[in-house]
Length: 228
Image (cartoon, rainbow, N blue to C red; front, side, top):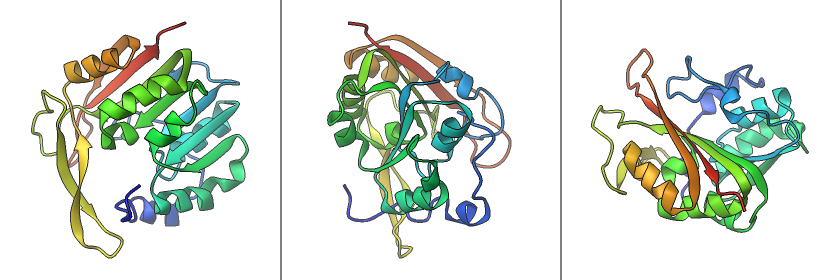
């Protein structure tokens, strides 16, 4: 786990102004329209995890409105974990807030989950050659992974045709400008990585960009762990 929390500033203003459980859940970068939680299917009584959950707004929505047995909101950032605890700590035990990197958490929980998902979260910011195999191992046979990721860079530059990370801007808690790694990959690269990690029934849908500056199209990707 990094010693510098590069997610210290993210979502802080919204958390000060909006402490409610969101009435909606969107996969698109714009968060304006497009598919919502129906993509996950019926999650009643199932065990889920949100990988790179941030302030746990998506996880809280599912916990309150869709009746899972348990949803683990997993995030490595101390600031995001503390924010999630302040906002939604009262939703336990159905919502469990986990302060840990996604890869070691998944490795420590083989076969624990029916469904794993990420909304521009851990899938974007971890080497997929490590994350995706760990994700497959943490799913029960027939379990599903669903994630949304950028279809291209926010600058408009095309996604990478190989497994290459880019340095993107970030800030330390003191405001110093630094960079962090983000994986923005083409559809066929994700498909190959998922296949190599043991996933089947891989489906990719491109969601259009919304209105406004720094908008981007979204890849919504679904895959299943092969049944035993």
